Length: 525
View 1 (tube, one colour):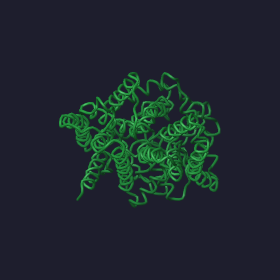
View 2 (cartoon, helix red, strand yellow; view 1 turned 180 degrees about the horizontal axis):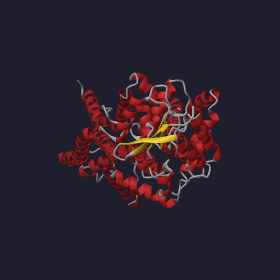
View 3 (cartoon, rainbow, N blue to C red; view 1 turned 135 degrees about the horizontal axis):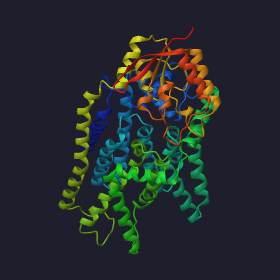
């Protein structure tokens, strides 16, 4: 077996280690976001259409990826986990090939280890949109570098457009790398007055992007869901991302803290580049075009990831491709600094000394040891987390209802519906849109109430004790409850919902450590 084949086998082992904590072991519930994606995916396999039949504010790609995973796994989460493995493996392979061709073998190994071990710090339970975007981001960087090297985009520009469309359909603010590539093309072509090249390149990219977007738009239009799609994905997200500059700045700084090792190396690359510019030296060679995009792109990625002002770790998965390649540049530059030829040829491929290899072996351990420690800690805790509150609830729901019964989860624990294989009586399977300021309205609340009245869920699980955004169903408990997030509010129309529920449902028991109230239908048939 050749050296490269061995490396790709080792890459598979590394990917398996990264995803080990998110393996679908018995008794482990999917996370809150993952539960919503999986429920929607399950309903897709039953013929339902996102947005029209199930409300969510994410673009559609994640639902259909999860639907494919469930199809592959025969309903098992192992199919989704396999797609996560495949996605991350492709991302690692593309990143390694890019760095090996641009920077050499050593930097490629170091950069790949650095970004992939850092992924554990922000991955959480997995099955996030940002995770599935990684191979498309690395592919964009590779196609861009290759096109600039050959002086022509042609079919590669078309593929970059496809990468941009898929990234957008996973999440709009995952377009950071494609955006900075567009800025680079516009800046360089206008500065060099290469108007024809600019037009042809952008036309190829636009054609690739539109070929995907038009298919998706046509699909939802054909199923009468295009208006719902616009309302959920665009109108809601405009309201969701409405925040202050200080919140966005705080979120961006927090992202740097989530990824300390990569952030420190990226900062040092900026310092070294600034030093050479200050000394009047130019950074040339095949690396410059990629480095230019990375240095600008990192700012754009952090701004995009922190745009909503919310401190969710998985948002910063989107920064890993640029941070990873910058880690490769960090090794490349230090190799040159420690090599005898650096004084004469900055950024050249001087012969690496044994001391240089020793330094980067130690630096690799700085990433690998915390990675292994994190993996061990998570895996030790998994058995203790198997009998979680949500899993107990899902098993209870499954045991005392039939497959034809509707079950309303009052809150955002949609994983209960998915694991119990019970339909929600309403497309608002989680109710954040009814409380989000700037989006909520009386018509949505009226629709929600009509769904409940019509479909009469046999059980309602009130998860408000563990969700500060959701008011309790009980008027007594609600009288002592206060909404503390200014981005959410309760409209007067919700009173009619509370009145109906209290008149037609009785609390049967409380379940789990947080004592979620369980309500059963007691109204007239």
